[in-house]
Length: 195
Image (cartoon, rainbow, N blue to C red; front, top):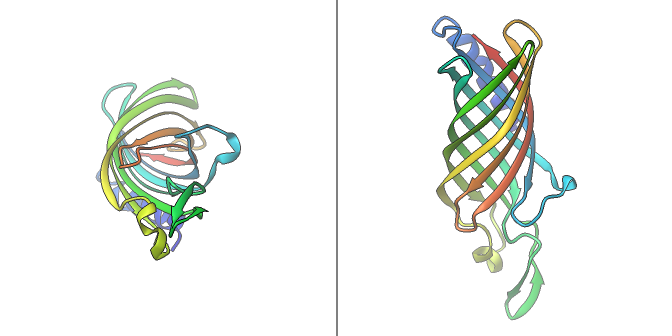
């Protein structure tokens, strides 16, 4: 089942099951988006699918939100498209793909302006780097399978559609402290339901 459907089903189930238990200070949301490896350069045409996440918010103070997020992104491996020596010959490596699953905790400071809310956020998390299988001769050139620490920051905005439902746009920079230290920028759109 695609990641988008899994995240959507999870958010709906959590929302339905949690309504009686949550007060107004809670929210759940999910989004899908694009990811861009900005380690070496930034270009708008380098945003590619796929990134998806779901989150739970708890309002700590009037404008301060604690957010727990779980997500997954699919990116090119760090060595994809680079030249390497394989079997004594110089070759261009294929677009080795890597899935990075993550769980983060962060703080968001929000600016309310009627039906529109903008915010800045940042936090820390754990990232699981899962490279796709590669041909035997280049296995040692793909990303390592590892679980590492990382941090993130970004900006977001949401537009209230109904009293408890908003559309969300979010731009997030992830610094994944893997062996190759990945710098990833994600652009997402989704929805959030406030209890």
